[in-house]
Image (cartoon, rainbow, N blue to C red; front, side, top):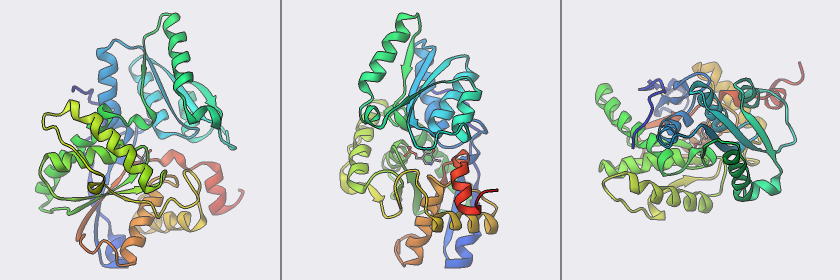
Length: 326
Ligand SMILES: *Cc1c(COP(=O)(O)O)cnc(C)c1O
């Protein structure tokens, strides 16, 4: 598969003193939050492949879906603008529909937004089919990207990121025995796991779930891994036992925050100068911290945490939880 080169890569790998200081543990962070600005975060690595596919098929309209503050939808809309395409985003309704954060940026770059009710969002297939048909009827050639860009093509972006990490290990003279990444729709984790097996490395790849319970997450991941196989030469098969998902840090549910999570993000920001987000990386970094504090992950000596972005998830609602109304 080809890709379009957009992301600022390789992203930096930095030592996280926070973990040395508090837990005497060696943790590094890979700054995939710095892959871009409007197109920052992990979604860009998937979209490099998805966009190349869309262009090969001469598509002029990107359709995708996500939560009302979806990072993926925002990155898709930004790239559509960059490549003179149009974008249609189907976003799941929420109680808070302020034009801020990601939602604001998608409007700014000209995306068309359609809000789906919770019921409609359960199965978007009919809605997407209808919208696709309408666009075709009006002379467009739409390209549908699944939630989070997490299909076999999108996940290739993180197979590539995995190989990027192997090169950086050589440069830094470190071997990471464990990679920790936030798991949502699964494309990021699937790509890393695929790279790990394909290159015969034996790293532990941990997915900190912020969306689904373990069983559902594993089910979705196996599906993506299977879909990836057609694009690689090795033909790898995966079983549920190879997938390492921790689901203890979802908290109140996807997109919902608790004060202890936000206070952790604040402490981390103040001691480390790295900004985590409340929906994804804040929960998973807090999860990693708690796992290590509780004496888990004993086999992990050198851990690499991938910072997957999400800065625009700092909506007014989250800020108010921390600091009250201004
Ligand atoms: C989407 C997202 C993730 C999760 O990646 P998936 O490939 O969907 O599992 C993690 N962090 C951030 C900031 C994201 O936007």
